[in-house]
Amino acid sequence: MPALSTRTGSEIGLYELLSVLPSQLQPHVENADDRSFLHAMFGQRSLHSLVKIHEKLQCYEDCSPTPVLDSASSLAQDLSEELQGHGASGEIRELVKLLSKPHVKSLLAVHDIVARKSYDPELPPLPDDIDDEEDSVKIIRLVKNKEPLGATIKKDEHMGAIVVARIMRGGAADRSGLIHVGDVLKEVNGIPVDDKKPEEIISILAQSLGAITFKVVPGLKEEAPNKHPKMFVRALFDYNPAEDNAIPCKEAGLVFRKGEILQIMSQDDATWWQAKQEGNGNPRAGLIPSKHFQERRIAVWKPLTVSLPQRTPSKRFSGLRRSFRLSRRDKKTNKSMYESKKSEQYDTADVPTYEEVTSYRRKQGERHRLVALVDTSRSKRQSESDGVEYHFISKDLFEADIQNHKFIEHGEYKGNYYGTSFDSVRSVLSKNKVCLLDVQPHTLRHLRTAEFKPYVVFVKPPSIERLRETRRNAKVVSGKDDKSSSKPFSEEDFQEMINSSQMMENQYGHLFDKVIVNDDLTTAFNQLKQALRKVETEPHWMPIGWTHS
Image (tube, rainbow, N blue to C red; front, side, top):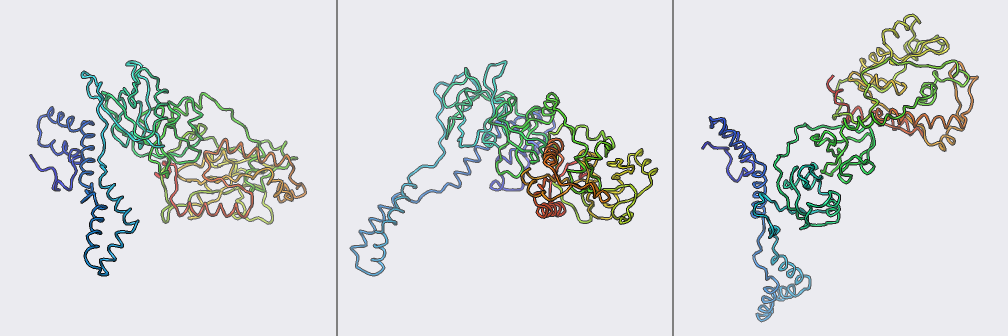
């Protein structure tokens, strides 16, 4: 037989040897049936499990320390009595005194207790009532602490038996390698479960602590390996399994919040994925609704879409678009300030579930990510210069650009057009500069492309109490040429700011990368600078499609 490896037996484990054996033997077996037989024989899950157990026990045996003696206390006592009868030198007196000290005696006594105790693993005894005709009955003993076992069970409709429905990746059952999907559960801690409901068995497990003994019959169907590559998603909604009546086991569910990064561990079940939170030290996966299942549920619910006030995006949302603000006097005559070109690319963005992401770090010389810019067209003021405050173009050219879908957003105000063009954004980015763009939230969908890679910051107002306190002396100003219409904020203004902020966060919150509360202007500005600095210098999560541009 050919050599399987150049390493010695002490360098290669039996399990590793078994794993490479089929591929090593394949070139030397000509018959296809023989190759298939060898592959099936050496690839059996039960054989691999036995080899794993063998190696664990072998490792324990090789590394297990053996005490030289277990009577150190009596030996020290005999030595002390013997020395007392042999002169009175300083060394002898010091040794006798040392052996008589209480803490030394206690230490030797503890040594003897530990040396006499057997730490060999204890296997549970085989039950006396095993049916001789029942093949492959397994007795499994797992130690349960506060962590769930990481397995769900169900009642098989055809057999009427309790079977293992799924194994949670990284959980106690998965790490043991002893319980598999399809195994038939017969007993738990000696209690027969054939006539019990899954809920009753879960209750038994919940009340059990320490070692739990299972009697199972291995399932005939091998558990399919996880064929999906490592996948990370950003959650676009909040989820609490305790509030989900559809989940097969609430205790096995994973709680997560909007914006958190989840690693998908298994998609074997089309309805319930297994996932764990990225950065969380807990290796156990939990159940979450799959993307398809969650989208179906949202489609059935058909949530009511709330329309935002026309004046909100310009006057309340950004706080920066001063020249676009409308006074109450103008609101009736300017019903629609902005229109955005229709995009079919983000039709599914209205069903926020999960967005696949990958870790990204900007490379030296690479384009900066888009953050925000305003490009307008109206009568030029004496204090403004073309290409500085705004870019000014003719009305005919502006209308032609509208027809050619060159604007991210556009509108008309007092006979003049205002808009933000795609080319203006590209121009800034091409100069290796950071483009700051102030837009309405619904236009973000048109910007969320691999070309722009936008980093979206939502600046929200503080509580209404803080608004009353900090905006007491502030005034609403329509624009530089409308100073006469300025007036203090009213209670209605404050309430409108809060309501609009909540509606924006509810509708577009899944598109925001950062939320900053504008309680104190200096603090909010520093938070913005720190966030943008991290985007430029540190790894962060980004939609996976944006990295392939």
